Image (cartoon, rainbow, N blue to C red; front, side, top):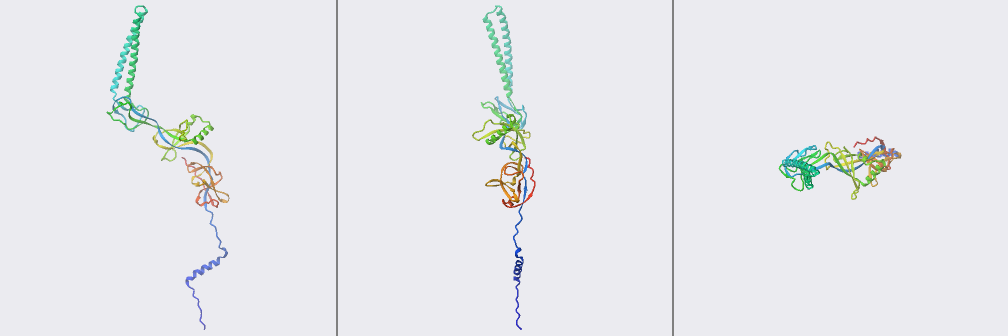
Length: 387
């Protein structure tokens, strides 16, 4: 009997044979299947009326502020307020040694009374001499002397009356009162200080009126031209301009919670800066605004009835400018260069570049490539947030 030949298959070779068998069984059915188009969220532009605003940076200023000064010399006798207190108009704040000035008033009044009595006597003598002169019983020289005495007494009375009024005024200056409602700063003198002796008046304190309050800002020359054109179209008068609302917000505040109106606009443009100075006035009963603060200012220019708005996050930017990705024919992505307008809450006004029926990609921008297909998923745009 011949020897039997046996073939042994190593276990390690089995997976290779299996893989070859699988590949051989696939044949021509092994073709590439492209992935589905990426999904993106799309929405048409929101169409609504939008108010266009002029934005500026301004600073607040007190409507009234005044230094309280010593108008007569003397020692400070009393300080009648707490530093930083709000006081009403006419409130007594300082007293400057009033007694000597009160005595001068009394002295002037006495001189006034004496001059009045002298005039009364001189007038009686004049009338008597006039009667005698008419009868030919006194000379003309006597009548002239009586007339001069009467006129001199009358002048002396007038001088005495003036002195009395001046003494009363100076006596009034010994009481320093608030000229308007406001907050008084810390006093700069102490009780017992001698004030008002120098040619420069001594500042006792300062009073500031916090309500209402001014907001000063400037407008660029190009904006001035646009505003003047809008004024001409609407036929507004200078009085109408003071009805223009102005919104103000602090650097740390959301939006523009403080409301006022335009109060003043300079008649000329500053040639060195190319800007026009303007001023608004705002009610400030809670004193949230303090003089000297920097604020954001917003002034309405005009309204657009059918503005197109998209979520601000949908905008991209490259060397050509700002753009939107829009779904075109066969769901192919198109890149549209756009002119942007004002931000209205979370929505951005688009002045040029899209149409009301465009499908704008609002989410999934990184998955959208211009010229490639996508799977658009319609969503609703949120309304603009009130600011």
